[in-house]
Length: 484
Image 1 (tube, rainbow, N blue to C red):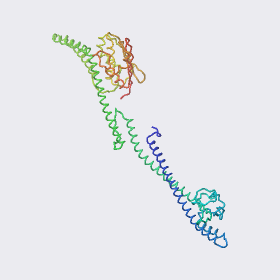
Image 2 (cartoon, helix red, strand yellow; image 1 turned 90 degrees about the vertical axis):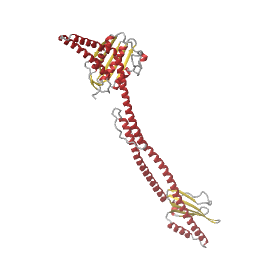
Image 3 (cartoon, rainbow, N blue to C red; image 1 turned 45 degrees about the horizontal axis):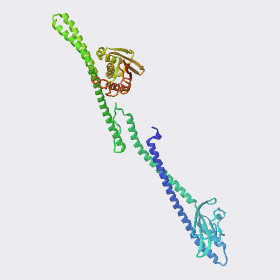
Image 4 (cartoon, rainbow, N blue to C red; image 1 turned 180 degrees about the vertical axis):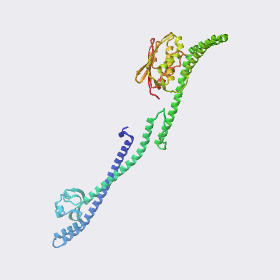
């Protein structure tokens, strides 16, 4: 799994993005609100200073007007003393009611301050503005209309230094920005630890799922818990137990089906087996009768005793073949000779083959390598296919059976007959369980299905081709396999 597509990365990106957006919205909201409060505070402070000075300025104007001789220096000195006491005032200007300057501080004369009014008219409310001047920088300017009762004295214009306010707001911005970044990092760190713990459990669960082997189940390393991941681990453990139990039951059922098909094949071979046992049994009885009649003739007793032993050995061999074929056991792979399996299957069916006048053409490769498989199960496959070939030839015919090396890793068994063939519409159904085209009592419909299951369990395959009236060919391909 690519890191960019991992669940942990997606969760962290989502949480990080969401947290960053929320923090940005919150910080912007708080900063705007704080900026408004700070600016309002400084506006009110500037207005209060301006209004206080305006009161004293009106007193100075009234005093100057009441003197018999007009003293311009008195008003200027009063304003200069005020500017000395308040160094944060960048500029100060006083206008008469017509807008003519009465007094302008040195900076006010050189500064590029905009005019506070477009025409001479009294202001109902004080005018407070914040702007940037090329000469003075950022300033907070207040403009007051001086009036007592109905007497208009003019205009007072004061510009306060706003750079400390701007510095304060900048520091406030970086403070909030640092706190926001720190909060996001702390939150992402905590989220990383939580998500890593969650995804670590999920990764362990995925690894166990990928490494789970029904043939060799291992105990789980995950510990069930009360959270969702723990419940998922508990469910996985339960599923593993059920799968192992189901596989065990399936294998038991498979073995029973294999054994049942073997017994069915034995039933169909019963007549031939009975004949193979009956003939030597009669010979054995005849030998015993002769021995009883000629008990005094030692030479005859020895000769008939030898014949009786030969008959008993033949009966024992037939019974041993049946026992080996009908034995029920688990799949056991070992080194085996495929040609020997074919010979044993032909020997088991020898009576029926002779009785039904079927010609066997063997083309067994003597250089065939040893393969690792279950000889008993492969023998059942060969017997099932030979029985099907015999059933398709009621009036004799030919069965060609050959073994060969397909490639360096596979061997092949080819069984071809000259029987009645299989209709094309039935070819895709012959491996279905219980499907048969034979008469009642001549087959169970499990032979080819069981054979296919055995071959596929060994990692092989079966291919069939058939033509009605010409015959059928089965090609079994098996891997050589490795030593277990």
